[in-house]
Amino acid sequence: MKKPAVLLSYACLALATGVPALAQAQRSNLPPIPTYEVHRAKTAPRMDGKLDDAAWQAATPVTFIFPWADQTGKKQKTLARLTWDSDNLYVAYECEDSDITAVRTRHDDPTYKDDAVEIFIAPPGVKNLYLGLEMNARAVLYDYLYPFPQRLVKNYNLPGVKLAVSRKGTLNNSGDQDQGWSLEVSIPWRSFSDLADNPVPKIGDRWIANMNRWDGTEPNRRLSQWSDSGMVKPDPHYPDRFGQLLFVE
Image (cartoon, rainbow, N blue to C red; front, side, top):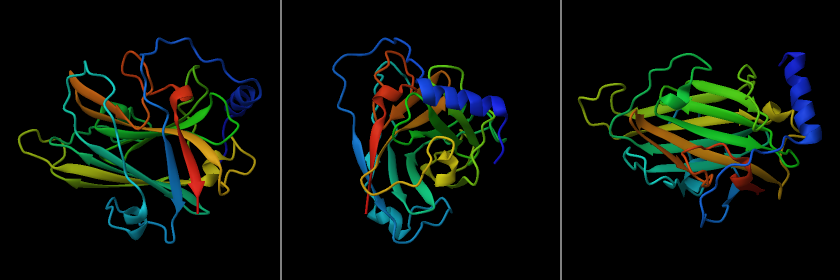
């Protein structure tokens, strides 16, 4: 994968110096930062959007929380699971949804404006620099590099990422009642080769990550998360509050 030299220079600068986080207002009484044990899959899950593989049945689900009480969208349940092997990180999302909406169709469209799920992730030793993947209910990917809190690098494309979605309902039809949708994503470890010399985790390694969901249409939108970002206003981007992924056998 070739990237413009300016992007690599920017990434190297952020890695070398650390980009100072902006002073942002934080809510009080925040929950502890969570840890998720990512178990190695005996057999890689099929990327078909259906979560009936043995790998997903063995993975522990986590339920997203709703940190912002003033949002007016429905509180619809989201479960996430993670597993891994020597080639990829696998993430699965299971989303209750009574009205599935997604109109963005092209790679790097602003999928977060649709019904969408996200993962922000970085290997150990990387400060304020992470990869973002934002994926809508059409399985359209918006991927980027984010030297937080500077401008995110939108034309940083990750190699070999695979997405699949399965929907229980009709897309973009508010006249009926949907049940929900599920999404699987496989992220090759080589996607992290600009952030780590040896990007494949070892047993016991801890990475930082957060997983989020944008649900509903304006003005009734709601953001839910695995780890509460602590922001006063709905905002998922705050790496100091990312959760821990502990890779285990």
